[in-house]
Image 1 (cartoon, rainbow, N blue to C red):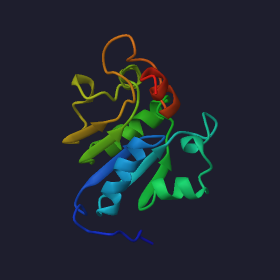
Image 2: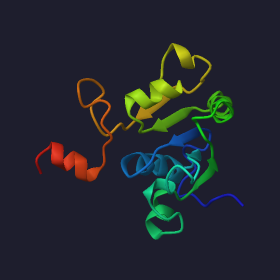
Image 3: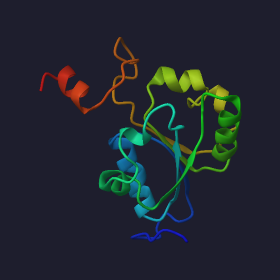
Length: 149
């Protein structure tokens, strides 16, 4: 059964959603709501609960509506290979990993990912891309702390 979407405007686009928490999933949800074929890549539950919340909660359901999902362990060679196969057919990749994590996994947008066909890669790292904070994990509380809010 295909998900009901508010629009078909982006129906020709394939999107891989590697996001967690809030900003990234919201952006990918908008693409899904506009008809894009979004596949949410979830990490194995042994690592952390999905998106820091119960997958059956209303918040999780709202953030990930109109998306398909699959579990991939990007830390394993097999999982990374499957991701790269999917990425060869994706138009957009949305992620919010820290820059060092993308580089370590080999999925940063650069020479190591030339086989990825995606013409657009949206990143929501949560912290700086350069400087001393670039490897710091970010969430709403930590971001407010940095900003002294």
